[in-house]
Image (cartoon, one colour):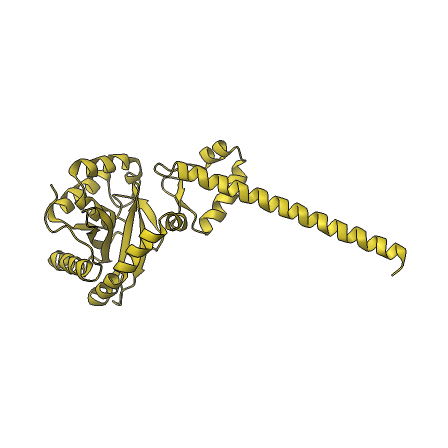
Length: 279
């Protein structure tokens, strides 16, 4: 290689290094922006934030904000409610923040889900509370033909939506249940197959009998039966739900299914349950 060729090669190498450095700089900038969005969402996780508010708070263009939020959502770091248009922390961030506790609860309750799914033939899932919301952390699919698929793992919704979250309210005081319901009213008004008044009636009924039954709330022809799992202090740490079609989960089976959930939570999950109406 002559001197001219070597000089040319050095220029090409320098140009590539410059481009790589530029790309590295852009990557670092995007990472910092994504972390800023995560911190901002975390600071407002109880209420959630809209796209325009996030863009304004972080002083980023709306298009850039949406692109980064979409990437974070794909990775489970951010969740988005299409009804309320609100962004909150996703299941992965929640698991990072409370990994030891959440994963322990999931592991303890998984044998419960396995047994109930085999016995009932329907999908069985567990949820945990997080602030004013609940997150579905585990699910075992049933074996019945024509079963109705329950929500996906990682799904996050306001407490009051779904039997699992209503079951959590059977183990708190009436004042606390009412306060949480009222805080979530703006979100509960957007549920397709029900109304806030009907949700409150479901909460009252669940507290009276010690377990929740929800019909046609998220899926029109589905019924869900759920029991809360309590720690030694009597606090609800999770709930276990059997979810299936109305034609099979009939009123005559409610008590039996709730009793079986209780028995398995106590025997295999090593938790306590609500055995009598809340006061």
